[in-house]
Image (tube, rainbow, N blue to C red; front, side, top):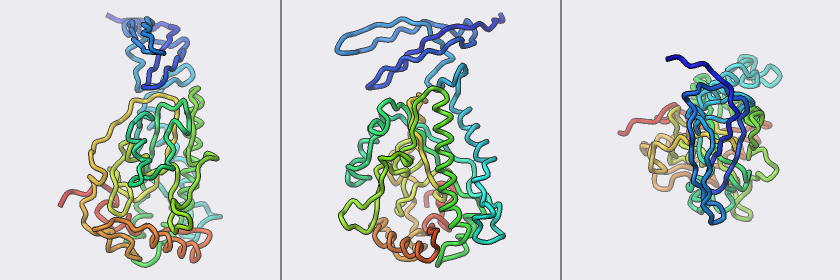
Length: 342
């Protein structure tokens, strides 16, 4: 039996653990057999309220409102991949090139994207001293209406990574571009993604570009720095990967790359985590220990931040206005994938 599409006014109730959001999807074109009646029992102000409303099995938590259309997670992922593929900012521009041979060099491959719940209790654990610290701001502190945290890992291209495997003393020109021009592109990308989400009518925010974002030392006069929104820890919570002993995040595309995130009131179904331990993907091979030019990483203690920060300060003086390191991310088993257990 064939069905003809019809248009309906559909009211959809989206429920999270601590808030109730009512969204109106007008004139959605659907098949009649997809319509069903959902009965939501909601506890509100200690009263039980039962709501009966028309909804659709097609409209699930994997979708968000986008004007009169519905956007799925894989559609958003395709949009992102297309943007990254065609963006001029993802290539070294002539006016910025350290060397003429690097003009046009692509910086990032297509990113990995993970969708996390803003209500994930693991975010609160990031406020523990052994994680980020009490200064870490929770998603709801950045945006009270938030439902979803979108974390993206951008792996560097093979040209960028290969250049670093050949050196053991100083960062290459390719890597310097990837660190500075690459980060500038990620800032542009995050704003673009926020705009795409806001065009659906969903409030969205980029924490690292918000006026409340700050980087500083947790200890007065300290020699290393931390922020109130750690992209690595956010990626861990959202399911992108686990930490290595050098404190980088090991994803299915390895560690050599950079991260960014956007938070939004649009609801996407969380991806979940395929791991249970903070260091589950690290095989403790010691390769990053030997690669570090200042001995800031050990198998016994992991990363020692002060000597790492001091080295970066030296790189800032030497390569101003750029700086970088990246030795612990390259020439190691976790550079481009999750390493196999020994």
